[in-house]
Length: 458
Image (tube, rainbow, N blue to C red):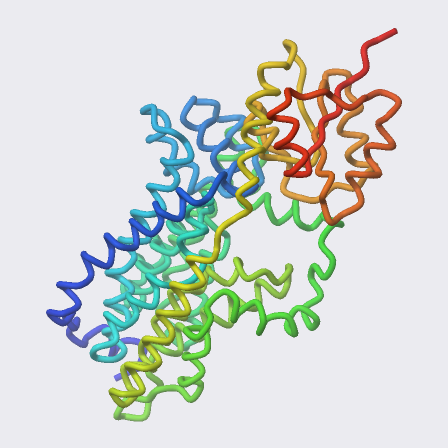
């Protein structure tokens, strides 16, 4: 019997009783971990406020504005109902991410259990303690719903439910472009029937393009790609060979010990008849594709989190096949490293000053006037659309401040890039330092933000 169908006829292994008892408690702890991390996180990330702004536009029925962003709309669309019902945007997003991460434990456990008896609970534990997950959820990134869709898609694919795999890949694409890698990994693993999954997946891509077109932004299902192609502010972008050299360090930052364990499966597991076991090959190709995509852009540890399902499942399979003593020791180390790194992952506590300044500037803005600069969170909390996700040169900042409706310019005085200081010199003819109230001025000095106000006409 061909290997691409044999595994679909095997019975679905139930989760062991211990896993069934532990998973609800683990899900609750993971959700609590997200909430506790959020309480330690002063503000969302810069991309996070962009997602929240899009969600607020969807919630308000401002479809043209919502679809104008280069960011994928899936995560904001999921947040929009809660915001429309009056929920705080930040906590709606955090709550959604907590629920998605908790729900992902079940398909992840079932994935691992299919590949090695007893690996299900191990995979769930490794996933729940992966070092970056709670921080990304607390900062309103989109990884959590993407990982849930990915886990469900992988589970459907290992059951040879190709149309269901394609649907989940299409859903994942609406959240992050890497969603299309799901069916590709199955085809590369010689699961030829997976070509059917591309039909519903590409239908999801088509629907996204149509949605943007009907909102007046042209048929472009992936505007973030075109945006990145025009960027000149990312050294190393697209330098594949140099980026490959940077992968090991970023990979270890993203996964720690759990990221090394899948190396134990470099030699493909084999079934009794000698055919390649499809599960490890599919997950391995998924990891390889994710690394390849990152290397064509820029290497950042956060980008590898999209492969955390594949990494933790393969790591659990390795652990399940080890002698009991080694399994316990390595699992304990992996969990300790993951939890320790998550506890240390606390953003700059002074970041909250961005919100304080933005809210204060909103009270100072004259009708029809705006705020610009290189502090996108300040702009967002001033009630305006966040800035494009890029670093700006001094000349670009000066051009952004040139329109007469710009009343304030907020710049990062402590930025590692010299553009902020150069921009202040370029703007000094039309702008002057703005005096802030004493408590706020002290906070801005420590945060490294300064505000320029347009000079009054003489």
